[in-house]
Image (tube, rainbow, N blue to C red; front, side, top):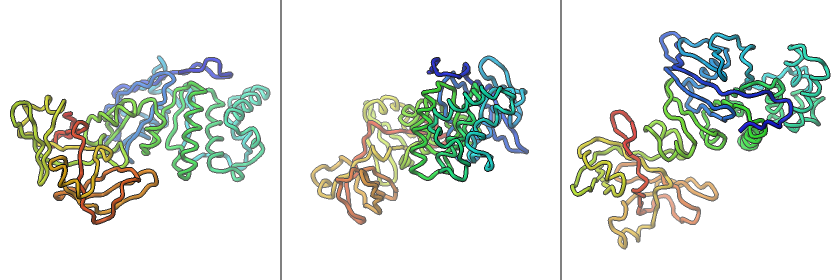
Length: 379
């Protein structure tokens, strides 16, 4: 992934975390986290507030000490190494720019502290400004810049140091929605041009799914699943990951499996039952009586009008439309069926209104099943 022809860049390095833990008082904020980030990879740490992702990033940076475990950057163990000696650069949620300094001075500030020659500082600063499209803004101060431009200056201050690893803590959360989308693209392009190792923290699944080479999902201080965005979306390892990834989130129905014999397995819930067929049934032939939670993504449910209930009996179940969220190219239908609330993703051509009765047809080849007690995925 590294671009060896990019001028001014030092060799990059991967990051390895081994059984990393952090205890604050009685709370285990990070719990035995083991993770390897490849050289040049864009890794996103994703999870809800308080899951330990920012604490993990700060431990990598050396801003917090681990209670247990090891941190490696490249082949070097840096667990007790001072932040300034780890060869990393961090971009924070707040831009942390010096308001009295120009763009030029903000980008070059770290190099001046390191005592580099003036000519070398000027060359690196200009290369970085050109890379980020800031060449025309060098004499402006932060107050004269847009939010996106201020974020690019913060990125420039990190890039100019030529670190081994870039660490980013919710860098887009202060931007409006349009600017966030634009800056996401800029950061991905920047990563590709630099070929550097990026570790990026966010609670925003859209950022994670659209930017990462791999996503590490965290909850309650523990690593839940690591993989490419599509892999995590299509094959979540537990109910937490399934619910956290996806918008709207996955629909869940609690119920029980019934073995009908002959390789036929039925999912039974209050007022609803589905005959599972294909691969899921083959895996579940000995699971009769097991309490499970069935999951279906909103796009794996289709709707037809009430007339279809007469022409296609048994192809789905009857539901009532409670509310419709129109989003231009698609719409989300919030429906009720036998006491269950579900969300269906439909195209804009589907013409329905609140109060309409519909036939909901699930794609049972794309069903997810989770153990109700542990939340672990069964299929």
